[in-house]
Image (cartoon, rainbow, N blue to C red; front, side):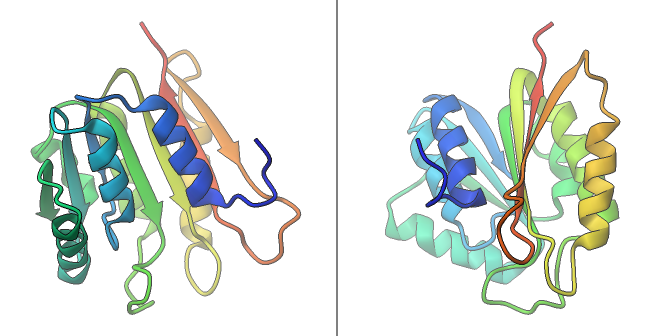
Length: 188
């Protein structure tokens, strides 16, 4: 595999595709326009389950429409904050985040450091013993730098005996290319 034609989302999707199996329960913690939700729905198959969260009705509706167009029925859409995921899901094999703002929408509505860090903590409580969390961090523009630093500090502080944290950053690309973090829960 080469990386010159890849971006953070494509690399995240490669990771998801290689790890998620049919029958899994997974969480899209930021449903956005529904592209990750659709991929997850296909990966877990009809025996699996996807829970997709977003705080914006526009995102939930956009995701619902995409799922209906593709005949996907194994997704529960939840209009609520990802930091409350344990209220809805007790265990999942994977949680996916895209921090930033809803593509093509109001840039004044975006994820924030405090709620994002709390949501990652929730995800770490939800994932199974060999589960994982993928985080795509969009931090450029007027938003996201504080969130990027808070997420990185939180992830650096995780116990290495319990979690393995990896970061993929395109350091020679212009601007502020998104960062991919993968957090694996180490097997007991």
